[in-house]
Image (cartoon, rainbow, N blue to C red; front, side, top):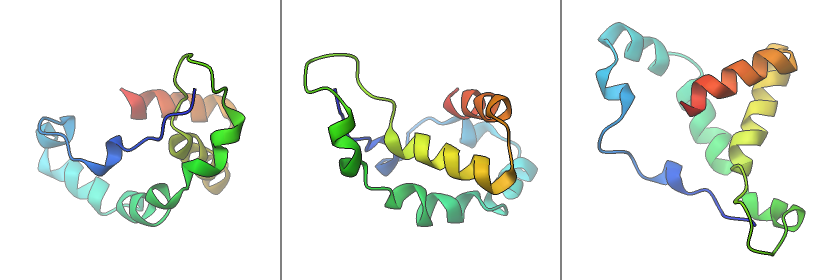
Length: 93
């Protein structure tokens, strides 16, 4: 079953980001991550993938924008599938 991912539109009240040391926050915000998030991740139109999912009530999809973003990162940095799996596990935790 297709469900549009809109969780990224709202900031969480309590987030692990708030507990990171300042040097780590500076590293994250100084990297490509904020630009990637704004210019790529948020621009992925999940509705185009609706037809790939069953209309029957079933387990919801993994957010398409997350899957496409991971594939872009994989190609951009030359990661293997194993490295990408490790990265996606770290991101979703």
